[in-house]
Image (cartoon, rainbow, N blue to C red):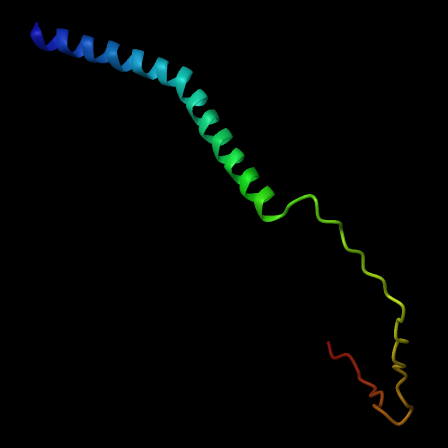
Length: 84
C-alpha cells in the first residue's frame, strides 16, 4: 500500500512540475533572449557610433575591357564521328 501511495504522489508531483514548466520556462527564456539582445545592441552602438558621417566612393575612371578575339590560326576544328 505504501508503494502505491508513493507512486501516486510522485506522478502527481511530476505532472504539476511539468505543467508549471510549460508556463514559466518560455517566460524565462524570453527574458534571457531579451537581455542578450540588449547587450549585443549596446556593444554594436559602442563600436560604431552613429555620429560619424558616411563616406561615399566616387569612381572617375573605368578601364576599357580587354579585347578577347582569337586569331584564325589559333586552334583547329576537328571533325568526329559518333560511334554507336
